[in-house]
Image (cartoon, rainbow, N blue to C red; front, side, top):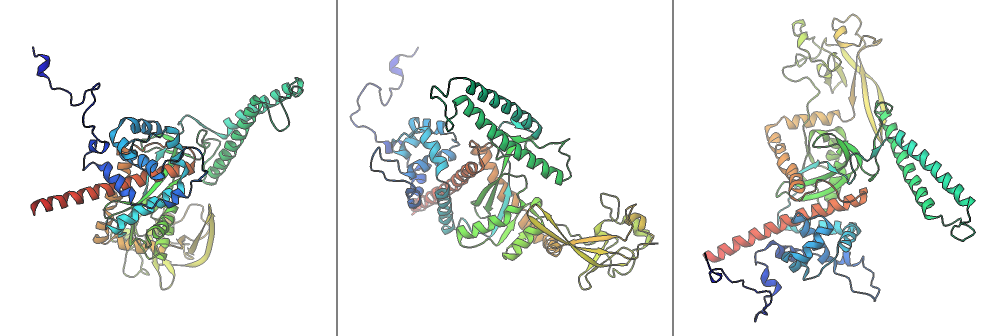
Length: 527
């Protein structure tokens, strides 16, 4: 058996005072990323943050915002999101102790700091983006816009319908009346414990709960009304309202099922994968957020992207028109609504009928009728031609509102459907007039996008979208652990998402500088 002299002695014994005390700086390696985090953040202008502080001249001096921001950002890079875990790291981890130079902020200080500086955080995001732009890491050539789903800080079981909220409000109203009657019948007011401006604690809590339930009930009724407008019966399928975080919405989960969620967006530059814009939406569809994101990019970097890449869910006329107005090439899946090769309706002269032998090959829509792609549009005469070669001239323009947006469509109608051999395949059974074709205000742009996407070069550009956009979300969720928000309320959630995307960019910037210095060291060594 080995004796005690066999084993190595500890370099620092707990009870012995060393002759040379190691410095805090010597504990951290020269190439440790925490040094670069501190170095990059030291180059940032913190005057916007400093302006948020009020110098009262008494009490303990505050910790500089750069120190606390560095702790939060470096914590996110190291997958530490919780304020309590961050407080623990500031006490026990040498990299955090070095970064904060021995300061030990508690979790309350970190938590309050995290939600307080929303506008200054935007400025920090912009400054880091400008540094990356200067280094050539952001070029704003190919930029991908996408969204994901992140769970709200609200249990999937803590949702209520309008019916259950009405019942809960009725019970609370009865309880409030009972408590009020009990107070009036007692000697509380005589004892000076109650007044018209100060309710007893139990009654005040009940009244506050009633106000919360009323607000949730209004939200549930509004959601039911919106469902009814969409053709969904709210009696059979009522809307569910989250009770812990009312700003969130019940949406489909990425993993399956439904739960209260938010929809964070990220617009990512294709050069090195830096996030150039971010936001959080409290709705399922992010398609109307694309134009706003592009405008914010121009505001942040002083110029707009050259190409925008997005998925099929955002490939609509409104986005195509918005990108055309801004002079940006739009890349998204788009299929032409005009007859394509292989469709018998695709013919050189649309005024000639499709041969009867080809009628069975004409595309049908979901109702079993001849699809719109069977009708050829002639831009010169502004009319359609049916498979029989008969014209469908312009009849009228219809305008309708969907939410806050107005949609315009031109209606074209055929006047020669009576006696047509294709009438049974073309018209509805109860149709009293000729076949109509609708053409919305952006259909020409849709055709242009479809023609662009038919080019193999355009497809090659678009095929980069998953690599650019979805890698970002994969790192934010899997590496940084952002699968559920820790804060409640849309404004706080937006700030939390901004912290995460800023840390994402800071980590990329630090790794780039680290690799660059490593190459320079090798070159110097070779010389």
